[in-house]
Image (cartoon, rainbow over all chains, first blue to last red; front, side):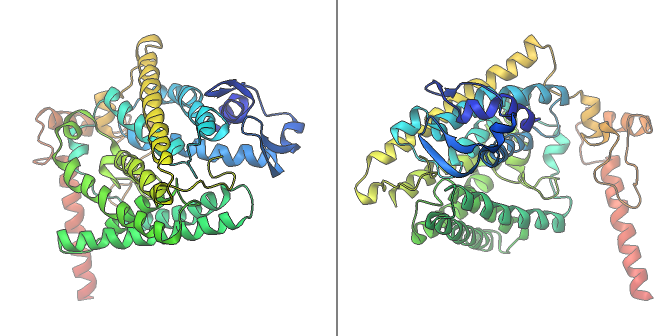
Length: 306
Length: 130
């Protein structure tokens, strides 16, 4: 559904010509000429050496991931019909203006706000939507909240592997060219993730007395998310610092804050966010949306500082 | 251009402290914008479209996979899983259980899990003996 809405209106709102400081003029990208023409971002005044269809698809995947992350937070209690209404509306009114503002040439682009590969546009926005939406929908059943063991650890590991490989693709793809920046981004992505995974595992060993595969996958994911807004901007040592932060800050917020805070227990139940790997196998959604995105803000600041 | 061009103005360590403030402004914009629109959309769905945001309690007890008639996690002793058509008794049981907020004691699903554990232990003992 995201793709259909994306080609009908979304792409042009997010990356089209100027309409408002935070939105482009809505239009379709369905004619053959739309697909074959050279890719340009008119509001930002840049063009790329590939056809627009590539750009439409590349950016669609970001949009789809954002919605998938939100789905992870509403899981196990949201009405399916309500979700089907939510998806197109949220894509058009929440995602696209954010993408246009920061990436598409809107007011934030002009100011100079940087977001390498979706720390703000994707993770911070899905984290906010996950948190706020979870408040409106209400928590899951008590039974589900108490029992959150992962269903299948091998499957989770397969998903984690796919995720890591895929992440190379989008962080490496974001300079829109096979540039030195792309190479740096891929290496930084892996440095940060490795550091984060290592740090998280050490935190588990220090505080729980034993390393855990689920923990290390958490650390891996927070590392991937953490480097995303900065992958092409920081130096290698910056990536190590970010990796250390993503291995510790979300660890604390997940293992200490989330288990004690009244708000998270009673009012806001972010299914896969708070529960991370809850009962779902693999794929994507094990990310601590809220914490990760909050950490994001910190990381963004720290990565720019470095 | 956010990462999409190759300009990097540098951060606070490089003497560009303004960038840190720009990042904070960007983050606050995204948080504020999405918080408002997520709420508006949720309220629109609930009050204008009159579509409930939550599944019914009965459906939640069955599980969000089972209500579509597709148990996502089926095991050898539990191939079909409960569905609205096939297993109203299980549903009744779950309902009572939830009313008591027991969640642990006498839970039929948990009992099934324990039984399964025992079965596996038995099976593995059997294998060892063999």
